[in-house]
Amino acid sequence: MGKNLAISLNELIKNVDAKQLDPIYLIQGTDQYLLDLVRQHFIDLIEPEDRTLNLAQFDMREVPLSVAIDDARSVPFFGDKRVVFIEQAMFLTGETTKGKIEHHVEDLITYIQHPEPQTVLVIMAPFEKLDGRKKVTKLLKERATYLSFGDFSERDLQQMIQNDVAQADYKIEPQAVQSLIRLTDMSVTNAMNELQKLKLYTLQTKVIRDQDVNELVIRTLSQNVFDLIDNLLHQNLRQAVELYHDLLLSGEEPLRLLGAMLGQFRLLLQVKVSKKSEQGTATALKVHPYRVKLAKKTSRRYSYKALASAYLGLVQMEKELKTTSKSPEMLFELFILRYQYEINS
Image (cartoon, rainbow, N blue to C red; front, side, top):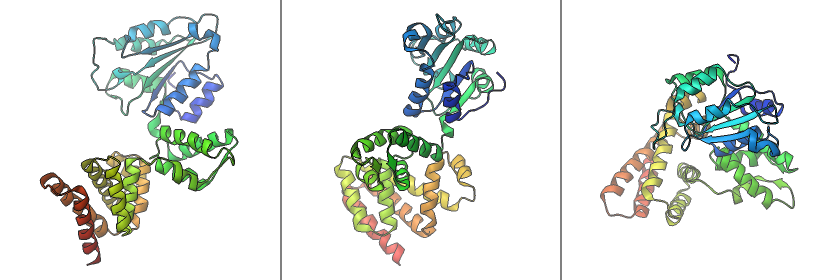
């Protein structure tokens, strides 16, 4: 098993579907769509009529690890394979578990060294990070087949969208794919959920256009902030004010909205001055490479002065929002006027 290294999602699905299986898999990531997708491919290894006997799922929030390991050591009933899931593998993280369930990781360490040949053990770790200092984590990364959704790229999501569309006998414009990814902040779960809505919306034509995406896809807070900042930097000031008012009317908290704007301008400034590659900048700033790509594209079009003036103006607005009784709408309009004066002076 020492040959098993990190694997891509496409490779894993291809191997599992071809029944080219390894004894132990570690699946890490927080995107629910990808977790469910991978889980289903492993479940499909077992015929539906055999799943009662040869498929088991153990939630570590409810069951001790030792119970799952004992089950993994069992031989299949009336079949050649068993699939055992260890769900919510919190013991691989640095977080402390709540409750009285004790997990003896030594049982898993022993199992990793001598796995049951007829069992496929799948450890699901729906977390951003694992504790690499732990012996069990190190051993799994060394000996198990390891899939991390952190390596899931924009190109991977593009391919997933295009495959889904093609399988349904639809077509999608290239720009529509880009807009779908952008409007859902490259969240696989959100993108694929919105894609199902788009397919229903275009049932008659079976062609998804960029216009359809922009009309139908629900914008996230970060996307609304992106549009707000874009209007501001383009000096479409009336549109910026109207969008700000609309967001407040929709129930968005002023401080949360302001915090999101400050965070985006901070990122634009950091990307503007960075001499590193997109991936290097993303690693240094601990943000997704896709966010850096968008920020780099935006920051190229504007001077450092324009970005810094907006950021400092928002810092001033935040102070006033916390210390005065002026309405957020008035403070934002004052910020717009000050920003316009500084940029044009």
